[in-house]
Length: 109
Image (cartoon, rainbow, N blue to C red; front, side):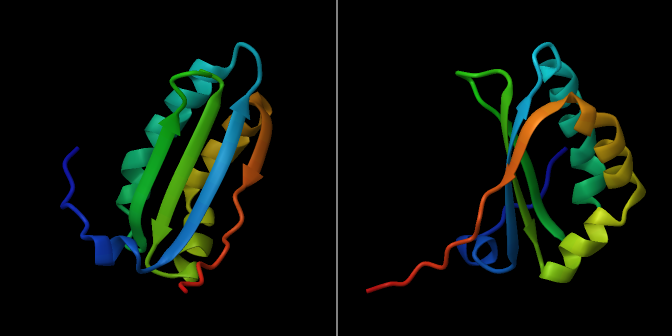
């Protein structure tokens, strides 16, 4: 799937969600498949600018998800979609831990 490239300015505008996930033993490949299946419907959402799941090359059970929305409301709308609800219901039992990476504003100077 090919998408238009985002400029640095476009990447710095919006609402960011970053999540670290660790799969349970024996569940990493299932989690990877579930995340991959979430890309297309998430990227089709009008408020989604970027949905990027990443699997660690050094720890196959570790995943990082970077989501960029046009606004915080976009995140709420994403969580209300059927594909997100199905993902959570089917994947949450396969996850050992998950953590939302907190946003820390950068203060130049």
